Amino acid sequence: MDIEERVLLLGILKKESDESLDNIVQKLEDAGVFTYKEGKKLLKSLRTRGYIKDQSLTISGIQKAKEIELEFKLE
Image 1 (spheres, rainbow, N blue to C red):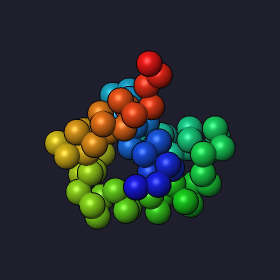
Image 2: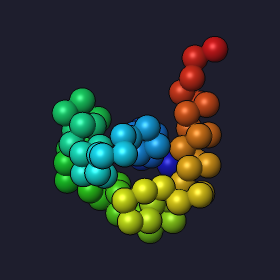
Image 3: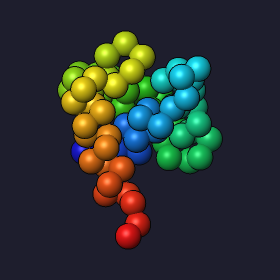
């Protein structure tokens, strides 16, 4: 899993209840992580791999995002 996918998955984990996945992609585009088009492709990839269903993470998506969160934490 590349860094952009990992950041997107973590962003989805941390999203507010009133935010959509498009909002998260837009925020990450604004931060320079990727373009909107690339973000949409990454969302599709994460859906195909079973990490996202509808507008939220699946159980496996939550588990993977929490693993990523631990990797990014500074000790």
